[in-house]
Length: 321
Image (cartoon, rainbow, N blue to C red):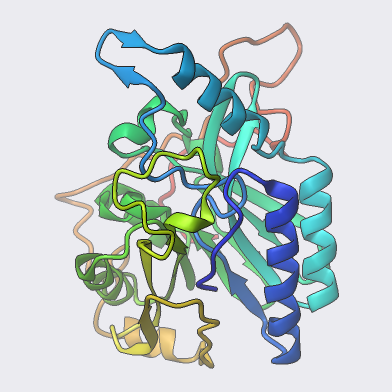
């Protein structure tokens, strides 16, 4: 789903989600993927008053507005998203800005076609200035979900450049590799094709189309003051397990990209390449993935898992469930 949200306004953006999911329902789609930070907003162009060694009062005010527009997981808004997924009869993958304590996270939420919240993925590595405003995820949400349409997971934006992250997903047998992003460059599209070939999976890359005028009037406009100036061009696409482009990339306009995914193509593609199977060399290379939830405070008799996490998982991802 290549669309424009209402930045920093979760309620208004939820109406945008509802409108696009209604369009998806008309086409009986089984899976819909929205871009990174779709609800809560990707604050492109903001500096939040930060320089090395100092912050401004105005920057703190800007962050407070951003924090107040973030989403608690689970919470009323996630409940509403579940209702919308159920009404559309589709699995929903959507990027949100998540709030927990005083920290924000770039998070992806997963909903079943009955509206159940299957889980969340917190971005492991915010990029560049994102580190001023987003916390770091841990390995506890680095998981793939078994669904009736296939094994479903997500890797967010430049996490896709992290080989270890990709291997952790491949080891869980990911088939529907969702890639919400804020990167609209041609080089990112090349990365998506590479990952589809490397993982022998379907890749669904979703990005926003945003213009200067989509932001509040007081939002910084370092790119251009023209309200029609494109801040994000999109570039969403759907890629097959041999790197073939099934839809997109689409630039400069909102679009609902669709494709029929033949899951039988995945074992055919893995016949001659399996990154964590017959094409791996475990005698030479190995990867340990720590899936422990990392909490700053633990109380006696309680798990260290996040309050919103169904369980605290620990161990290596060396096999496919």
